View (cartoon, rainbow, N blue to C red):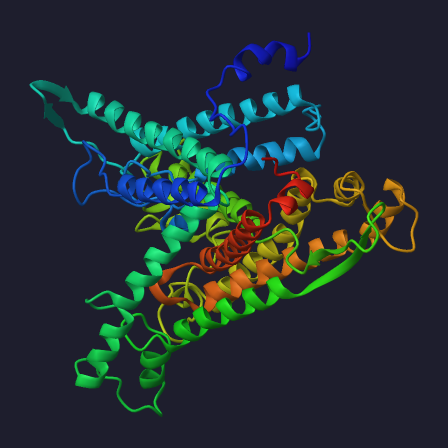
Length: 500
């Protein structure tokens, strides 16, 4: 008996959101998406019951905008388990270890069930150490609730249950948007998280808000000194408590570059084999795989740092000094200060989050210049290579590769003018463009993400988070425009397989 036969009773019984039987009107799709978005914001504002106030440490820190969760809320883990499960399936599918044919309806059900099961497992594995290890989510010593008294262990179990429920809710909220709404739930949550940070970064009426800082500069409450001095220039250009001009410029440039890159494309002409005069074009965009593979790269880094944080909390280190395992100090593996790596392996593989992490000439980062340069180099290589590799995985597993694209074109009745109407011929033409563009686009997105992180952005949004938000918003705009067009012209919907 193979693994599919053994797992089928479990995987086929995983709860699922029913697909619409017919065409969903555009207004109804918008209503579903808006409703899920409101629910998302509502859940991010529900604080975890039983957590000591002011004592929690945000384990994910700068990854928050990418993982679309809220520290200390019921959505504490965000989309992390969903993305991690996707990484596992991408790797297993890429190595052809699953033996699933996504064209087979039975295997499709098994694949979706396996994905949900992995999300459940990842939610448990993520939440357990957060609640029961270290001071990430310190539980109250006791809690009185509805006449019942809970000791600390029971309070921890209650916190774990809330996080678990939040993770599962996010899984099915994503599925509702994907089947009944516009775009994907994950994309919608990332846009919401990043947009909230951006708006807060601009309008925050306290120190660190962009407009408030400039108000203080004009009124003289923030002393910038002489503009020809290094301190004066850095106050205006870099520091969070100053003008943040470089952060503003980086934010605007990322918006412009991503929108421009989304419009750069190679258009392959198509003509209908039976309908004379019916022509079209298949666009191969520069960012063909989109920026979504960046979520996988950053999630991999987040999980790596998560392991380091857990190790630092064990063996008596308690987040300070070298990692201790089995009574041995392993400084080469990582040393920690204030819960963050400042030396060893986990320091060098930690992403560059902001200018403070590398501008050793403007602030005391605590490391030698050569150490900072090694960390920067590793981050650049990891993001560029990782972006290209995960872009390839993304394209192959989402039926965007040359073979799958050729089949889609063939099934639609279209062909490439001047070539025989044959799947193999179309595939060879696609192989001239798709693999190369996928690698170049993935590497470019990785480089942009590192660059944005190094220079900083408004609101402390990571470069990856900003890239994701802009690109997803642009694609959402395109999808909305396409939905409106098909709503106006039902014949187009029938041509593209939308049904009634």
